[in-house]
Structure formats: structure tokens, C-alpha cells
Length: 311
Image (cartoon, rainbow, N blue to C red; front, side):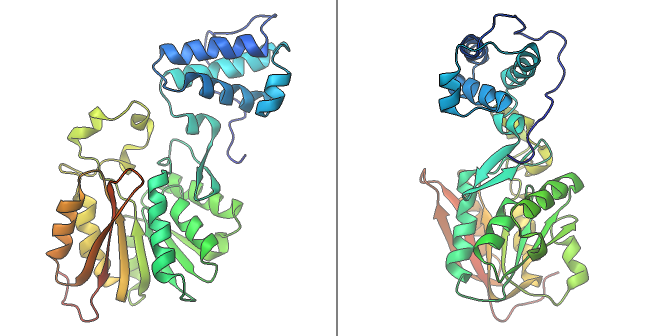
């Protein structure tokens, strides 16, 4: 497991420090602690935390459930239970999240990859996968999950991944190294397409982005776990569409003729973003993709061969 937490955060008064504390009693105490904090899957998450600290799989945990737990391990597990009870996402505690069949390092500097974002990878593979030597841009790469997944599935492609957060880019680079594609991805720090301006004239076969799309007003209504994620990756401005407008406007200068632009959407945002796209004369073939819950999750469109100047 990459990016795993080796020494959990210090707390002044660990919940569980008792010489006779066994694996089973620790699991029960942790489950009660998380359930009291409103964690939906308290028993499962308690087990995952204990497995993580003790280095056991599920079978070994069951076989050793009556074994005593050292004071050091009790303190480590207690610290993680406290952090989870504060509704810090489990992925940040364990240090990883699965995306597109790959394990990615995550921490509080990056948005946690979601399953619905895999639609962007599927779309690019389906639309561009038969082409060789592609250049693809991932704007706002975060953990690098999209860029790395595309580099793994399109081995002849070259990826350019941008992010305005230096800390996020470090996580993305580590994930690229871990999955053996760091030589296929150029990482650039800057706001959206800003790093690409020094590459004017380069045209991308596809540009993908999972931008911030929560309205500033709605940030306070999100689940407690989401509020632990970086605001920079969540806040889409007053109406939630600030970055969609910018992506639609700015991508034109970097897309190849008939090039694909694909952007993730929040629930209920498809009609507005589709109208924004259709109102721009440099695109055609505006479509959306639904996720597993039936939500229109991705908008995709193509650049016209002949375009007008973008001011």
C-alpha cells in the first residue's frame, strides 16, 4: 500500500490502552465509537482500520481475534478511530483509494477519486483509443488519477497534467511513478491552461477535466467527510459553473480540429452547461453521459475544424 500512514496523529488521551485488550474487544469498541459519531458503516470501517494498523487481512484478523494488542498498536488504532469519528475520510487515514482498477495515494492535499470520474477515462478510450501517438491534457489533475489511468490504458499517448496546487502535483507524480507511467506524463503547475501558453501551437486530441463544481453557498451543506477535502478542488464559485465557463472558452485554443473536450458535472448541472456549450460557436456534437445512478455526469463535445477567434 503506497502512501500508508506509518505513525498516526498524536492524541492526548487514547481511547483504548488496556493490557487485556484483544483484537475482538478493540473491534467492538471501535465500532461503537464510529457508530456514535454517525459513521454509516461503522463495523466495516472499524475492521479496516484494525487490519491496516496490525497488518492483517480479514482471515488473519478472524483467526487472531482473541490475541492481545500491544499498547503501541492500541494507541495507533485509537488515534485513527478518533480521526474517523471526526468524520475525516477513511481514504485519508489509510492513504489510498482505488480508481479504474488501480490504487492511488491520497491525502488531504487532493480530492479523493470517485467512481463516476472513471467515465472520463472510458470516454477518451472509446473515442480516441484507436489512435496512436495521442496528446491528451488533464486539466486540474489532483491526485493524477485520470492522467495515470489514461497513460496505463493508452500506452502510446503523451499526457499533460496541470494543477494550481504544488502539493497536489507531488501526489500525482508519486502515483505516476508507482504505476510506471511517470515518463509518459508532463506535470505542469498553474491555473487551468496557463502552463500550456508556453506550448502555443500544440494541439490536443482530447482535453479532460474534473473541475470544482460545488457552488460556494452549497459548500456548507456537504457531508462532513467532503469538508475535509481541499476547498480548492470543490469550490466552483457563486453558481458552481465558474470553471465550466472557463474550460469551454479556453480549451478551444488548445484542441485539435474535431478534438474532444470532456468535463465532469455535478448533479443537475447538465442543462446549464450544455446551454453554455451550445452557445459557443466553436463546438459541435454536444452530448452527455450518465453515471451508474442515472445522473448526467459528463458533458463532451468536439471542436469545429474552422473556428473564430476567442477573445
